[in-house]
Image (cartoon, rainbow, N blue to C red; front, top):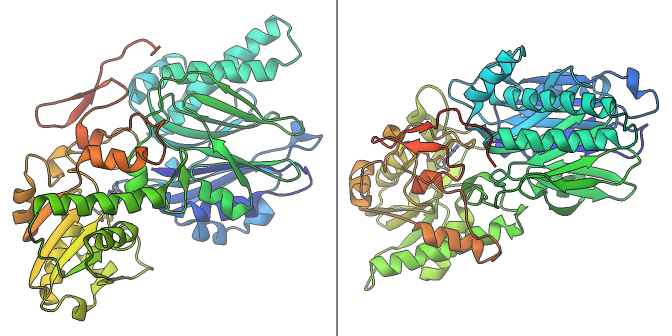
Length: 499
Ligand code: AMP
């Protein structure tokens, strides 16, 4: 996961950097590892204008406090990126936006993951391109650069001077999408052209765009960034669609290579902010429905008496879920865990993650003492968080500890940009819910059923017929991922372009 944002202000005298910082801050939940912004100016002499680029490891506020950003990042057009932490933190080399100088001068900010990056990397190297990082985003950028270069040369040969940039950009985007498999939502800054945004042919990763009075345009991973900046949400970028934004010209969009909308369901459970509207669905509303479905599952499992005294959320993501679950069960909802808001995410924290959980969360003892508590979390992945929370609940005096997860059992690796890599470290791998309960030390554990989870989102937009659910189902929409016997995966050997 990562967050991306792009801005083009109609007034060439203005500077968009401060707003990009605000946009990225709003998307900070999508990645806390690194942040970066590149800007340029579209005024008349923009041929001679250079890109201004600042990117570094750290939170948005840290990266842009270290640099007097408003002074160093000039211009009315720009893109920004926040990076999701990868194991070990990752190097500053991989910070985005990334840049290549040919053709035109291109910068890219990317959310997602390509499944055929290594195959593409070899092809690019054969074509004498130099790939300087391990990042699949650099591969995506170079594939686009290769096709844009080719398309511009072709246009020149044919001497179609009018409209040639637009045709070249769309042609390059189409070829890029046909070659790049996986999940990607990307924004690009193209020197002397403007802003480009596109979403993979399945629409796995989210991307929206919006407008503001006076002709300003913004693109972002989530609608919350548009809200913060005072833009009204135009719509989601469609699967395989390209949005081209240029100074003093209307926005042009084209669906270049769509397969079918298959958004990642985990966005609704965990990643996105509840105040986001994604593929026409309010994330908050979907989470309330998840709580209702969980209550249904509890009633089905324990038709006579569930024995729960109090429902307690694992903050913050699962709050709306737990609240609605409690409401549907007609059982009190209480705050039992207090989160230290200054501690970062423990999921990928290097070192002792167990200690990290205790540093982040502490119990309000009176809410547990002598009670049968239901802990509600959005997911159980490796079980580190839940094991610790069950133990903390017992230490606080809980009589019984039940645990329910708003997502089904996470059993398979993710290849589309979520850091869930090896099946063997997943607690639900080869285990039943009762086995998981025994591992966690809980009295019982329940998981949401996948059809129920899908229903929570689909019931808010009936046009969403399928979702990217690979971590739960082992089904990979790009059809190039094969599960091995141990539930780990390999991507298929090099093939030709997808159609
Ligand atoms: P674990 O401790 O490995 O079972 O992880 C579960 C906890 O991490 C839950 O509380 C989730 O809110 C959170 N979580 C789940 N998936 C992810 C992810 N891919 N990246 C970051 N955090 C996650």
